[in-house]
Length: 132
Image: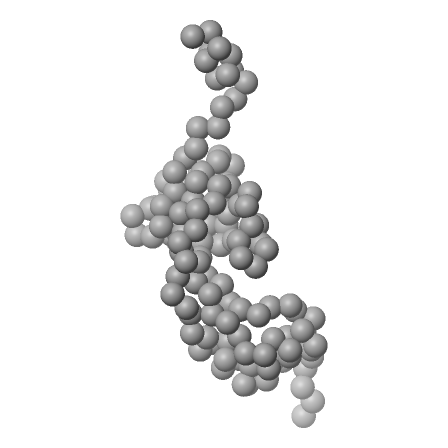
């Protein structure tokens, strides 16, 4: 039986499935919501400042106190979220790089803690302020 090119060896699958996450790091970034997944209680966000691995687009789990219906696409928020990181072994990172052409040394998860709508001034707002 020949292996398909997309197959991952069992040892790599097991390590990725059982990755141990380190203590979360609380981060604050500004950005906006690209997509809202109501059923999964997740949002895709575009962040202006990158996260640890260089990404600007991350999927965040919503906490129980934030409903998907409270989220609005395309407006600027300040997001406070926990970044969870699970480092991968050298064996797995070497395999991913060599066999799958994927550069990945850790698995990341993002859990939103809170988000605050930012009052980004438009030209009309600036004119109102200058009249005072």
